[in-house]
Length: 198
Image (cartoon, rainbow, N blue to C red; front, side, top):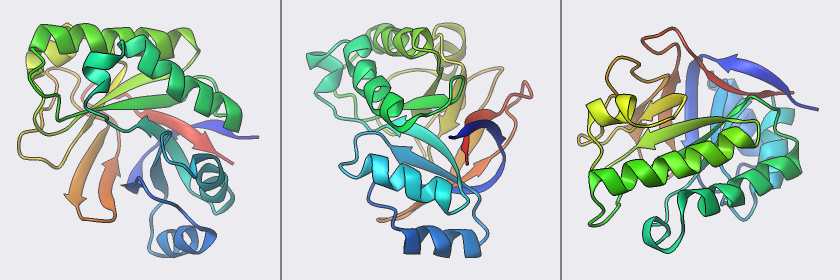
């Protein structure tokens, strides 16, 4: 059974599979944290592999541009909630939503959508986080003052934002075609990303 942990240090995120060999390599290279995508077809097995291999795990829901118009945030959140409940993700741990490539959505529309997503995740007993990637309309001011997110994760995209006042508890430092690299730590308010450990 996984327990709750405050995550800090060297990490990575990867949408594809995470085999036991991959995990062993990452741990040997000094990585201690990983983000896993709840939408991955191998999500449950990868989550178990990461925990069993010694990584601390936080979860995110990858972006799918039509979701911003075809689903409410709460509907989209329910998919992530169902996935994390199946693997025994600990209460209080964070699920992040990947906000990028939002098309023609306005800032207010995205704030409402994000808040709908966050409230559903929070009502299910988890922390709600937002990853601000490329091509999304939310300003640094609105991210902090107008959303109900608990934590923020900054993309390595040059168009990413750092929310006012709180800042980010995870900063993506390098993006590659197969793995992205992150630094986990306290945000400007001293708060950490909370995840799972074995």
